[in-house]
Amino acid sequence: MMATRLPCAPSRRLCQCLRRQFSSSPINHQTRRPPTAPKPIPNVRHIRDNPDLYSKNSIDRDYAAYAEYPHRIVQLAQETVRLSEVIKEPRAKIKEIERSIGRLAAAEGGAEKNAEQIASLRQEAQKLKADSEEAVRKKEEIEDEIQRLALSLPNLSHPATPRGDSPQLVSYLNFDPNNPPSWVNQRTEDRSHVTIGTKLGLIDFTSSNATTGWGWYFLTNEGALLEQALVNYAISVALRHGWKAVSPPSMVYSYITEACGYQPRDQHGEQQIWAIEQSEKDKVKPQRSLAGTAEIPLAAMYAGRDISVTSLPVKLVGASRCYRAEAGARGVDTKGLYRVHEFTKVELFGWADRAADSTTSSPQTDKLYDELLQIQMEILSSLGLPCRVLEMPTGDLGASATRKRDIEALFPSRLRAKEDGKPDLETAWGEVTSASICGDYQTRRLGTRTRDVNGKNPRYPHTVNGTAMAVPRVLAAILENGWDETRGVVVVPEVLRPWMGGLEVIGGN
Image 1 (cartoon, one colour):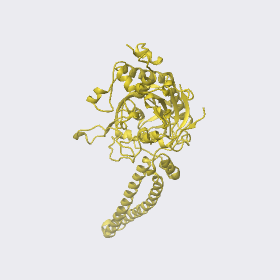
Image 2 (cartoon, one colour; image 1 turned 90 degrees about the vertical axis):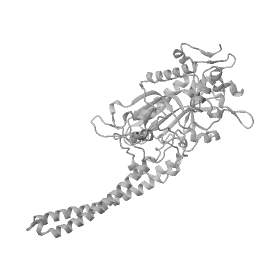
Image 3 (tube, one colour; image 1 turned 180 degrees about the vertical axis):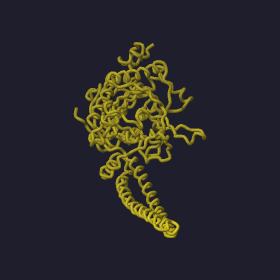
Image 4 (tube, rainbow, N blue to C red; image 1 turned 30 degrees about the horizontal axis):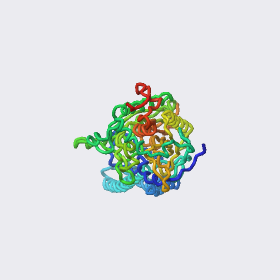
């Protein structure tokens, strides 16, 4: 179907800071890096050659505070050129003085006879050296500032990314807008996954309040089985498509998190990532953080390494526990499992070779991205969930993505009424997966490269990532959409039954 521009509903605008996982901020030079950490290499030359492009892109991406950075980089780069010339002159004079001293030492009477003249020349050389070192210091400071500014800029936006704040509708899954589900015109309080999950003994929020607090939960009985079934099913689909399984850690060096485009705090100063407290004796060691997504440790698997061009694309799928410090404001749209601090997620991550002249995409990148999207749609379609696929706009992208598609499912409990009392279906959609192309944003910051088979033409490959399964949200969507009020049961999607001992329904006993 033709892509349709969706209006930027007030609820979407109010939640935009929540939907954007993390925002870019100036690189934190206080973040201690291990000695083996690769040096990030932003594409400063491309920024210098296209300052207006990067400035406009910063505004489009809601990073207006950084719009002046590209032009500042141009100015600073010009200053480094001037300082390079300043450095050349004293260095040339020092070499000439050294030659003069050599000639005086070799002349009749040697160094003893010409000691006064040699001392004068050495004094002059010392002054020139001091002047040169000052210019070198200034040049290094400016180059560090250029690096800081360049690394702070968000990725360039893909040509397919809509500019502004309104997403474009791409397609529907298991949903006909002209024939919506029957619950749209019925009361939906009893279709909340919180109500259903509590009634059937699948979710325990009371115990989590005692153990950890708001934003945490226990999955119990069939709820715990459903979590494992969703993980196993998502991995099985990815494996069938040729992706390789990985079990990644949930803790990483903090600099890895930043390199992937995730920052400890967003532009509003809101905490996003949990850092691990270190003892006094360990304060000198590199800081570690809990990973907000398996994308981060998976991206770091090739940090500081080369990937053989014959191995590309590399396609990995990994399940992990994920941690988010910000779980959203308390309210109906974030109640229950929709936005939590800890959850299980299956992540798809891949590296693809880049086109020589492309910063945002390549044929191999696009093919890998399309394959990732197909996996997402296959999983959600087979679960029977009504969904819509959206091409997300520049205003919704985080720092690293050049392009992003979200898939949203219908949640009966999120349905609100319009002013005239009629149901507003737009309010019932909630994101369950996202898929991004990050170009060379992450590989430049992690030092991941590839080369031709002859070892020449080193370059930074592109990365793509996407959610294969965000367990809490999909579980919530299954409870709400699979609820059979007449029988008091939740119908288990057929594809999950092999991992649940053949169980067809939950409840009804």
